[in-house]
Each structure stands twice: as structure tokens, then as C-alpha cells.
Amino acid sequence: MAYPAKVAGHDGVGSKEIGDRVSYTGARGTVRYRGGVAGHDGVYLGIEWDEDSGRGTHDGVVNGTRLFDTISGGKASCVREIRIGSGGQRSFEDVVYEKYEVHGDLPLEERVRWEQRNQVELVGHGAVVEGRDKVLQLERISLQGTGVCSFDVGVMQKMTQLQEVDLSRTLISSWSALWGALYHLPRLTTLNVSENVFKTPLACENLPKLSNLKTLVARACHFDWSDIRSILSLTPSVEEAYVPRNKIRDFGGAPPDSHSDGWELSSLQLLDVSANGVTSWKALVKSINCFPSLRSLSLRENPIEELTVVSGKLWNSLRDLNISGTRLSSWKSVDVINQLGTLESVRLSECPLPERSRDNDGGESFEDGLALPSVRQEAISRLSSIIIINGSAVSREERKESEKLYLRFCAWQHKHVNSYDLEMSISSHPRLMELSQAYDFPLPQDDEGSDASRRIVRTGLGPMRMIRFSMHAGMHDEDQASKVVEKLIPCATPILKLPRIACRLLGVNLEDVRVKLPPVDERRKQSLSELVEVESLLSDYVVITPQTRGGT
Image 1 (tube, rainbow, N blue to C red):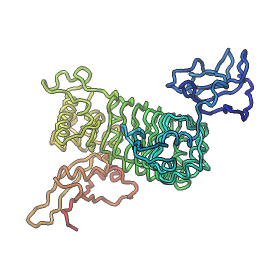
Image 2 (image 1 turned 120 degrees about the horizontal axis):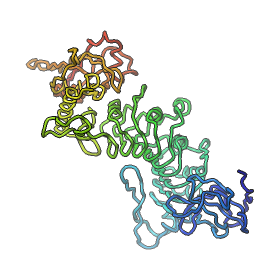
Image 3 (image 1 turned 30 degrees about the horizontal axis):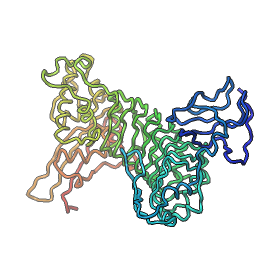
Image 4 (image 1 turned 180 degrees about the vertical axis):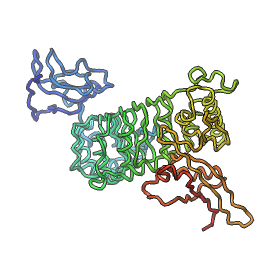
């Protein structure tokens, strides 16, 4: 459909350009059109209002003619340009001096308050003496909800102490203008630009880098993954990036080579991409691998339906994973989390994981008086190294009770449910063999009487092979005999978990453990399956030798 010709811009007061942000009668919006409207005189602005504005009567179609497109598909209206006036737009300098220039002993201080680890709000008051010059000595400012849209570089060059800036919900529309101004703040460490709508594309190619920025908050800015990637490339020292409620649907394929454009960010430790519409776990893994120091990842409220095994490098430093509110509905997806050998905390609340019931799991006769495993108990039992679930610590006693109950249920299910043979049991419960060995709980055998510990079965994590380990604690005191324990361990077990297994079985401290493995390429040691390539090697063993403190 042909759009009507637009009126050229002019230099008069109140003139607006496509993409400008305006405020009108308390509502904020983005200019999508400037020109005439059939049947009406004068120049009109077609404005797409923000989602929380409560305004808007159409999607850019007026009297049957499309004047402009909207991002949201609605919430638009046309307003005479003369009525918009300045559109609430103001300069950074005017807003800062109006808010922070004080007289007498009025308090004036700004502090950072963290809320739920995914949002930064700069609030509060502190002490500043009288005079405009003292405003330039501020360390923290909050201009949230103001009409800031332009910057005076001369003023910003004088604000040499400024470290934390909140520019959320302003009228800034030009990313290049914003970033160019921030470059003149040499001590800037925290930046909040949430709920701003910027002109696209962002055009980050020739912008300077903010080398001291540590925390970036960009919530609900309509960014996609390419925008986020471009912004992070300008922040080589950023440690925490909060980008929830944007437009990240996919990750645009594999990230660029880290050695060619510096995409690999070794500084990033926390990434929040909650409520972004992410659906592919596989694409996510490949992209996040570019953050080798990542310790915390939030995927809360993304429509991810399953987690699948992804070959290659995984996160070697991840400690905290939040997948609450996703669409995970299968315990096989939870089993995949065991691939992350360094993970300690996981959040699974509000996921539609199946809860065991006597009707659905054939458990009508399951040990009368004994409750079936709860979702939490099953999660504890399936995730061997997790110490915090849904923010609550897993005690040693809770893990022991949960694993024993889960093991009894799995064994009962294998024995009494006709559709469950041993292969099906281990496929549905990958830790079954491990728990059976740990608690000396014999599993029912199949009719053919095969040795369950030596069978190769198919699980959600690939071929389930067992390898026999001989673990011994070498004592330096001659009066003490070495403690030796033999154990069958699934080959899918991450090598990083071996020290923890040794500590539990041998009763030693984690810091005293070293792992001695057969020769293997150091870069490929992800799981024991790297050491057991063919069935004939199942008898190989690995020695885990804890050393006493002060030993050689």
C-alpha cells in the first residue's frame, strides 16, 4: 500500500523527526509519522504510545489509509504537531541542575538499590553544599522519568566524579548521541537505560568503548540479540548485564569469532535475559559460550519447552541458573542440567514439571503410608551436585531422604509397572544406577538376568555405560591404612563431579582432592565418556587420591 507523502521537517520550535520520543498529557510515545491527515488541515504527528500509557485508538490506519506502521500493532493516534509543542523534551543540563541544584543544608545523596537481582533503581538523597558547581561533584544521579533527550558535552566533561547514572523512562531516542555523551564520564560504572525506545539500527560500529562500565541495565528497550551483542562489544569490562523484557527471539546463529572482533567477553559474570521470548536452548548455549566467566544466568519466563544435550564447550564457571516460569514439562530436560558440572543453584518454580501421583504413575500400591516423591525431592535426586533449589538450601539430610525415597519409587516402578524394563527405568531415571550403588540398594533384574551395571542402555544423555572406579585416600601416617572404595559410575558423569563423589565416599575435604586420569586431551575432558570410547575399555579405572594437608 502506498503511504501518503510526508511533510518535510523544518527548524521551527516543536518540529519533530521520525523516531523522536515525546511526552503528551503524561503519556510517552514514539513519533512514527509526520504529515497530513485526509480531511484535516495542518501537520499531524502519528505517535505510537508506550504500552503502559493507556492511549491509542488504531495501528496507523486512519480513515482506511495506512499512514505508518507500529511495532506493537496498536496503541497509536494522530495529534496536531502544534499541540505537542516541545513534547516534554529537555536537555540533560537543564534537568540535572533543576533537580540537584540546592540551597542551604537540604539532603542530597544517591545510592544503588538492587531488587531481585534483575533490576537497578537509583534512588535516595545525600548531602551536597550550595551552588551549581557542587552539582558537578555528584557521584550518582537519577533522571528516571524525566524529559531528557539531548546532552551538553561541556557539562558532562566537568562531571568527573559521576559513577552511576539512571536514565530510565526518559525521551532519549538516539543511541549514538547517548553513548557519545557517556564517553565523557571517565568513572562511569553503572548505567540504567531501561524503558527507552531507541531509533534503529543502533549503529554502534564507530562508537567509543566505555572501558570502566561494570553494570548495564537495559530492560524493555525493544532490543534484539544483535543489539545486545553490539552494545556489549562497547563495554569490554562489563560484569553484569540485565536485559529482560526485550525482543530477543533467537540468537542470529553462531556468534562471531572471538579472536577476530573481540566478541568473547571474559569479564561478564551475570546475564539476565528473562521474559524475552527465547525458545531455543541449543542456540542459547552456542551464544553464551562466548562468556567464559559467566556465573549467573536468568532465563525466567522464556517459552523454552525443553533442554537438549549440546555437544562441545559448555559453561565451565556457571554457578546459578534460573529457569523459573519456562515451559519445561519433562524431567529429561532437568537431567540435562547435570551437564553443567559447576552448577550449584537452580530455580525451577512455576515450570509445568509432572508431579508424581498414584493415579498417573501406577503408584496406587506404592508402599502404603509412604508419600510419592514431590517435585522438589525428585529435582534433588536427579541433580547430583545442586546445593540450592528455588533459593532454598539442600541439606545433607534432605538429599539423603529424597534420594532414598526416589530410589525406592524407581525400583518399585521398575518391578510393578509392566511397561518398565531395566532399560526403560535407567532411560527415565539416569541416576538410578549411581544411587543404587551409593545406598547399596539392589535393583530388580530383567528376566534374562543380565548384570544391570554392565549393560549399555540408551538414555536421554546418550549411551549409558558404566565404568568401575577404584578410589583410595592415601594416608601419610604409617599407622593409618589407605581407605579404598570401588564404585560403578555412569560414563556420562561430568569429570568435574569426580572430586565431590570421592569426598562423599571417602570422607575427605574437597580441597584435599586431586583427580588422576588416564592420558586424554585436556580440552576434551567434559565427561567420562571421553575416556571410554569402546565397550572393551569398560574395565579401565581412574584413581582419585585425596592428599592430606601439607602433603606432596
